[in-house]
Image 1: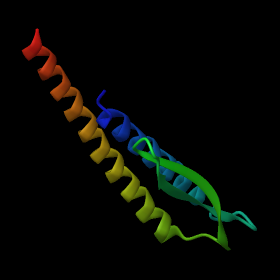
Image 2: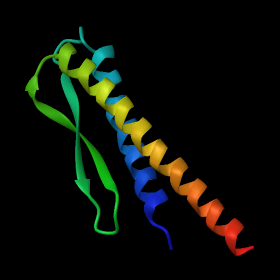
Image 3: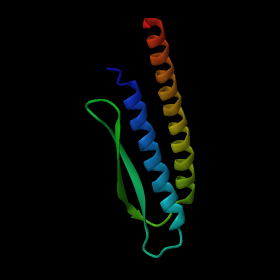
Length: 99
């Protein structure tokens, strides 16, 4: 079984989680008592990553950090999407050669 697509998919899901958390933080910039959401990523034993949302220990907004986080999440999503598509193309080519 090829695990590359599932690893890439978990990377895309982690990037989406990071993007959602950053958007949530920006939307709540002026909310009193707001604590930012942060995403902690960790490797899964079967491959891929896990992304968990936690509240920041530091109160207050950080627009610059959230802007950078959104850009990094977008780039991570696009990179994992490219891996997913390439894996799909290679699997299709392999099936064509065996048919």
